[in-house]
Length: 287
Image 1 (cartoon, rainbow, N blue to C red):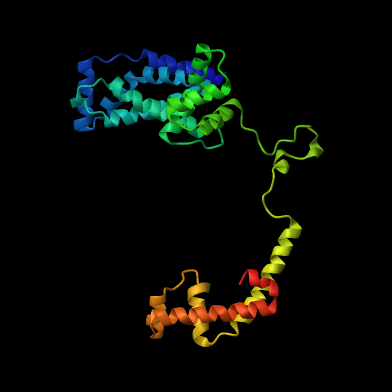
Image 2 (cartoon, helix red, strand yellow; image 1 turned 45 degrees about the vertical axis):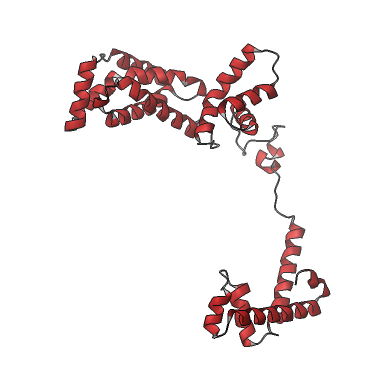
């Protein structure tokens, strides 16, 4: 009730603000632009609060507080007042409408759902126009299927059919906490989070992978022992370092040609393969 009374009081104050004549609006804008007169900027903003309230009313169906929408719209209004150029001979209301709408839409996209939606211009257009276009198409032809409606909306807004279907599903359902009990409602039945599929390997698979990895590392370290000092240096620099050295870099460092480095590397890799296969014939598929 307190929120409703605050909204009514805010609307009453906005509607009571006097209109500005074109010349008066221009003079105030010039004072703000040339002299940074804060009072002039505030007069312009207050005179257009009814525009903010009117636009906030158009976004009420998204389920957000009217007072919050008005506050966000007021931020956009102040931004418009700060950027307005009176010499362009455009009414302030025309210029401010874009800033007010953009501020409210950004607020809605940030707060309508805990799931962050798309922020591209096409995604924003889809979010704010999907319901309107769907209702319009359904009224025009009641025989249209949901698939056909989605296809026409996708073509009209320049987005993919998958984007339209995903957004429609999001707009048709509320956010649900993963900590909520499962559908049975039994306290001992667990939470929705427990029902999500996990892509990680099963515990026995994880143990098997860990054992196989340790075994192969042991074989690799033993195989490296078959290399001489220069071969070891090249293999470590070329194959085992995060940023592998080039043939030219190693050639300059060792005082040999890059072709010679390639030959030594090839010979060292052959030695490693033979050592690994000797340790376990099954390693031939990895060597």
